[in-house]
Image 1 (cartoon, rainbow, N blue to C red):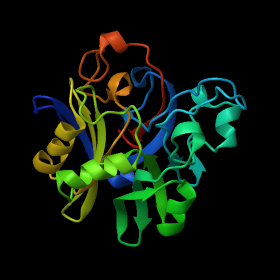
Image 2 (image 1 turned 90 degrees about the vertical axis):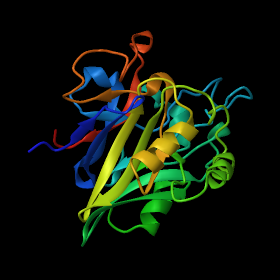
Image 3 (image 1 turned 120 degrees about the vertical axis):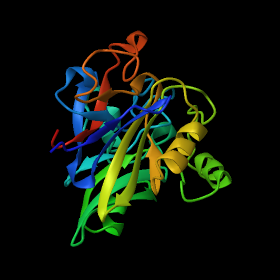
Length: 255
C-alpha cells in the first residue's frame, strides 16, 4: 500500500497527502530533484550580508526553525559563525538575528497517535516546553485557516516578514493538516505557477478543508519530488530555477 497520495488535478496546485507519522525533516543542500527523498522544500533560509560583527552585517529577515526528534536539522550551506551565534535552525529570526514569534508546523507523538498543530513561538525550545511528545518543528508563517482573512492579514504583519509579500504572484509552498477517520494527515503543497498567499490560503482552507497550516519558502525555493514527478519540469522546479540549492526539506519517511 502506498504511503502517500498524489494529486495534481487542481489548475494551479499539487499536493502530497501522507499520515503525520510519515513526515520528517532532512538536510538537502542541493536541489530536491537530486536527492532520494519525496517531499517539498523546507523552512526559510538565506545567507547573511556584510561582515559578522561589523556595522554592515545583517541577518536575513526570514529564517525559520528546522528541528526533528531532539535535534536541529542543519543545512550546511548557510551555516557559518554568524549563524551559530544566534542558533540558526533553532529559532525563528528576523533582521540582525532578532527572534520573532512566527507560526511553526508541529508534529507530536501522543498516546492517541500522531497529531499536528500550528504553534506561534520564536524558539524550538519554547515550543517543545509547551507541547509534550514533539517530534518535528518546521518554521514558517501562519495562515490562520480557522479565521477570517483579516486575522491572517494582522498576523502576517505581526510576524514581521519584511520583503516576503502576501500579494505577489510567485511559486508557493505550504503545509496543512486535517483529520480523516481518526488519522492525522499532512498535506505538502506547491503551486504549479504563480500564486499569492491569499490564493494558497483559499485553496488550503476551502478546497482541501485543512484545519490549519503554514506557508514555507517560495519562489525558486518551491520544489517537490515524488514518484509521479520523475522528470525535471515546471510543476516542481522550473527550468529557469534549475540549480537552486535548498538547505532542508519536509519529506516522507516511507515512500
